[in-house]
Image 1: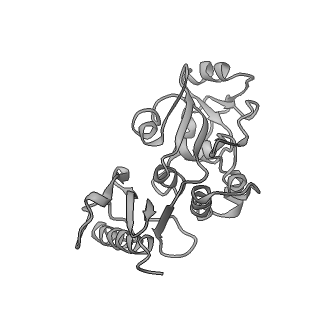
Image 2: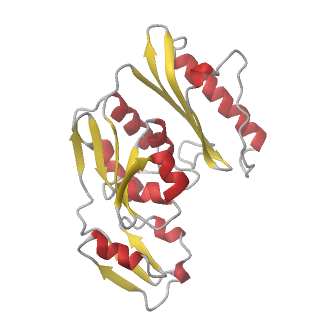
Image 3: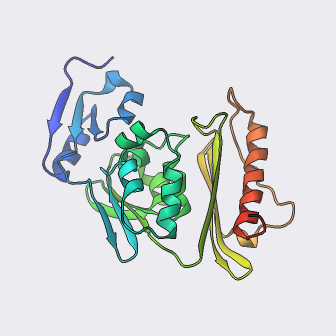
Length: 264
């Protein structure tokens, strides 16, 4: 149950929001979906950041820059001519949740919250996205560094950015579910650069593991016949840990074949 004395804080600047966030019990409010998974009795105040003009989608120098307040639906449905990286992202984002939820889900909240079943964060890791945040000062970091160093610390996420188009970019994704509309038990995303008959800069991102996500870079130097990753999953009511590991490796093998053009 929520407290009866919860305060609603309207703010005008990032610094005001930051000062309030450092006070015990105050939480950021934007789309509001993640709040229901917070221990409600600990919440003393909501900091409404919807007045901070974080709902923008810019395209600069082959880069997509999405303000933290942009909904997943808005990012997917942008009429701008999408490059191959942006199209890959939109395809993966379209699998997240349902249309009504995507209309409410903000890109910022999805990254800050980062549940184990997220379709959003693994996709952004796969394309080497960057996060701009405020934690007393404004900084921009790679999303992998953000997850390792900043995600669980106090901060305000300002925007996310990634390439719109990348020469010879190829990507693959698959997710394990029991039915079409379901939380994924795991997701495998693979990206790379296809040059003639070779596939380079291979990045494999597997989510749903004990550590939420595992990232493998420059896999072209490590992939051999009968190559297998030993991934650490948790069993659940749907699938055993061993089954998840086997399926993830099948997805990786299939994805690499498709990206190399050996399977249509």
